[in-house]
Amino acid sequence: MVQSSPTHSPTYPPTDLLSNEPPLETYRHLRQLIVLLTSLERLWQNRQDFFAGGNLSIYYSIRQLKSEDVRGPDFFVVLNTERKERKSWTVWEEEGKYPNFILEILSESTAKNDRGLKKQLYQDVFRTPNYFWFDPYTLEFAGFKLNYRIYEPLIPNDQGWLWSDELQLYLGIVGEQLRFFTPEGQLVPTPEEAEAEERRRANAAEAKVKLLQQKLRELGIEIEQE
Image (tube, rainbow, N blue to C red; front, side, top):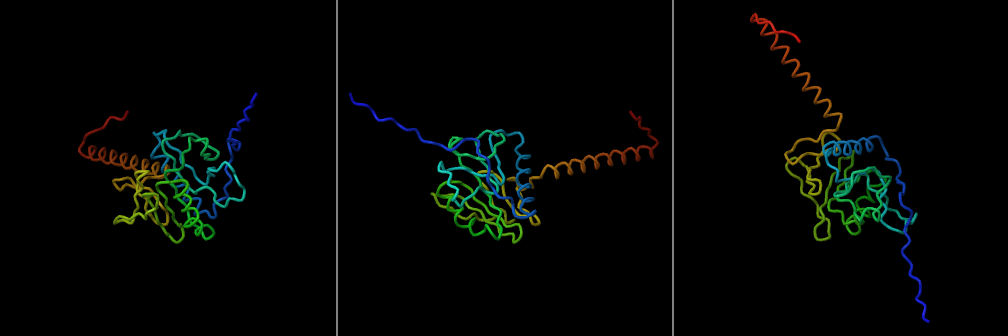
């Protein structure tokens, strides 16, 4: 009787892996990440088909080698996935999906890696269609689009903005921050900015009503107050 040799299924690392990213280097780096994350999530508040992560590990190799130099991106977006909280992005638990969009916030200690090793990884392994980087101090800003397996530099428009095909948004510098803009050129506000604008409009409308009431009184017309 011939006995068949046992088959071995691949061994995967444990699921629900925690992120293992170092803290962002400065408050300016942190603020930049918060602005991008909160403004995009507000803009897409009615969408449930994306995940946006900030300073979060991406696990893509089942080896999980501690010696691997490459860590997660500073900011990334995955499309056509479930919008829910995650402790990390684990590719083999996410139907093999990699980010559609990645942004690195450059610093003195990471810039060389972001321009070199990480760019190569995102191009050759992740196959991420859009890769951007931005330095919040020097304002160095660049973007790339994957074309025939090679990153091609994006050409800025007249405002110096770069277009993301994946997000269908522009990215451009306002002051010392990188911001999103709609295809029509409107700034994508953060929740705080949107709330402040709503208050401004409400106050302006109230002031307009009071001015109209005052003019009516001057004409001898009394307005009944509810």
